Amino acid sequence: MSNIATRPRARPKPKVERPRLYKVILVNDDFTPRNFVVTVLKAEFRLGSDQAYRVMMTAHLKGACVVAVFPRDVAETKAMRASEAGRKKGYPLTFTAEPEE
Ligand code: NFA
Image (cartoon, rainbow, N blue to C red; front, top):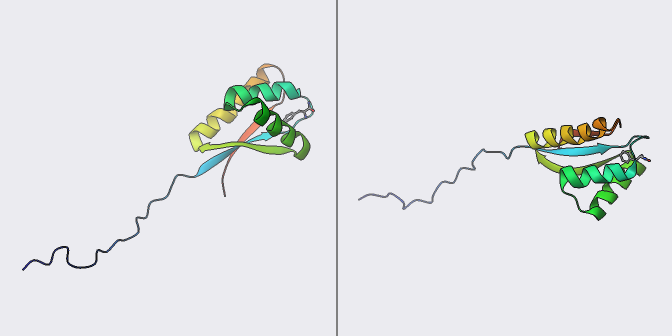
């Protein structure tokens, strides 16, 4: 007689890992106007007005602030686009992307 499926099923833990997420970080500078930073946060990261203002002020007061987390390619593209928006206006506005711990 077949004993298929009569033993306790072995359930090896699948050794798959989620892709790491990357943080996009807004870096403070002394030149980019506050309202321009807020505008970029709203346009590039779809933050609401209140959240955009809070992120801008946190970077302003503490030196940097995490804006959002994304898969690597999305984080890098968004950081680049947002930094370019500032560069286009002659501001040193900088966003970086770095892996989560
Ligand atoms: N520190 C800038 C100012 O006082 C505002 C700013 C905030 C710039 C966050 C860059 C990032 N105008």
